[in-house]
Length: 138
Image (cartoon, rainbow, N blue to C red; front, side, top):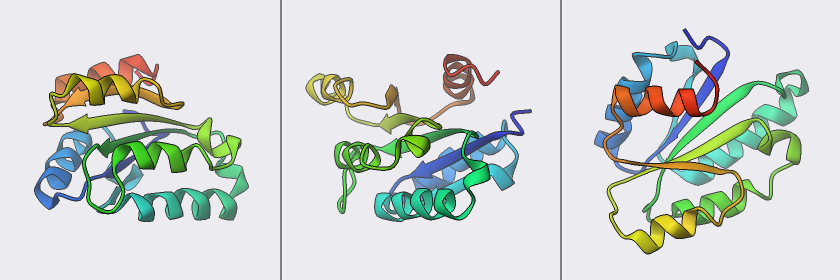
């Protein structure tokens, strides 16, 4: 199921990262899941991977990122992601996973290009299925 879908998970909390990876692994083959403890590493991967193999442009991908991280928060990640080439940006939908219940932060996300949705932590199988349906990957 979902063999062509690539998932990038970004979270500075090792426990949250492992929990999200486990939930995603139940639906998507493990070889298509990339985990990053730093948003900067995820951005480097996106640039490197897509520069290395132009033929991979056109794949379907989702990015699950935490909102509050010390080095670069989710807002900054979205800003940096939007500086990547259009061919890269067009292939990923970005969803924010966060424990925040601050409405002003959530509303601010909706102002960002390439932001696809918000899900409260933890990610459950039901939330993941909803997300996959939302992007048409089901």
